[in-house]
Amino acid sequence: VFVAMCMFTGCCTESADKTKTPETQRLLTNLTKIAEQGFLFGHHDDPMYGITWYLDDDRSDVKSVCGDYPAIFSFDLGKIEYGADSNLDKVPFERMRHEIVNHFERGGVVTLSWHVGNPVTGSDSWDVSDKNVVETILPGGKNHDTFSHWLDNVADFINACQTTNGTKVPIIFRPYHENSGHWFWWGRPYCTAEQYQQLWQMTYNKMQEKGATNILYAYSPQDLIDTNDYLERYPGDAIIDILGVDQYRFTSADDYATKLNTDLQVLEALSKTHNKAIALTETGYECIPDSVWWTQSLMSIIEQYPISYVVVWRNAVNRPNHYYVPYPGQASEQDFVNFYNNPKTFFAKDLKQAMYK
Image 1: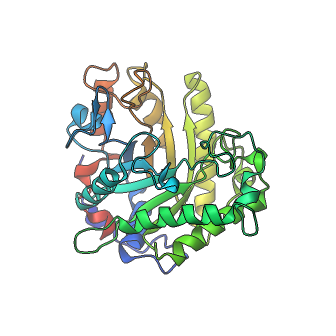
Image 2 (image 1 turned 180 degrees about the vertical axis):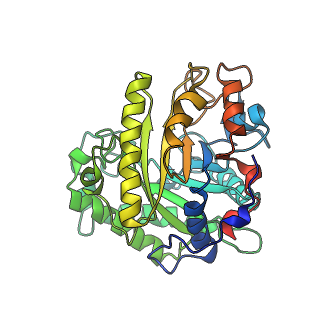
Image 3 (image 1 turned 45 degrees about the vertical axis):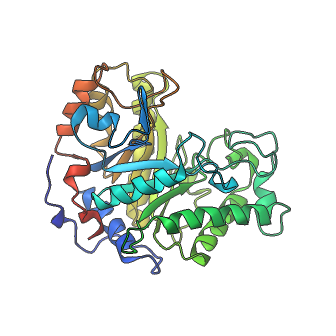
């Protein structure tokens, strides 16, 4: 798969935020342009661990199968709020920063989610025992100062992601995701739409205050109904750069196709009215038991829509039945190679740093 990335240079989607670094603004423009020809492929924690390995150098299950890294590396900041050395999946933050800079220098793109802990209970993102966490961290709330410090830690890490010559790596930041569900403390049942939007505004304001202007912001609920449903809690065009959605295959192929087509139809409609890039920010089929899932299920759906990128979830080293890309010998290995060779899929070797130029 090779494309002349110099084609992605024209005037297109621009952020309403004119304070973004030049590299970050160019990434946004090029994300929109690339959707005219195909999409970037991404994998969560790709260079950190995989089936039977952990923190090896220059290793990736994707690379082991197709000889190339994904175009997008996805990582998670969970536990950075506490000042921990490693995240919730035991990835050292310093190694993460190193891989982020390396991937930028090879032309790749980086996205960060944040499974942020529960500031009321001290537990994790999935602790929904207290139904009013968001209210307590907004300005005036009893946990606002604590959460403000947590945001400082996020901004400090993002600011530290820079090359030796001081160029900050553009980061697609995707906090408070899947907010349409009930499994995270920021979910729909636990705060009003206004409170959720205030949480985003507070986060954006803190990043600006700290000079973290190398950020593109992605918004990604799950299981969309229509455009009104998507916009109910939408933080606004002045903040959000990328309209995303998360959708996994949990049941039948037909159910996945129905849900994903609905999701992407909603995003496509909104991309036109809001002039935003769109992405499938999380997807996958755990253990990929379908040997032709990549070409006959995933590709057959997403190639119909102008998405900029798709990210599949991680290959856990400590959970043998929790992986989302093939490894050598896995049932969908050859189909993934066919997916890789499709001219619409872009991996690391296709980019050559031009996403920032």
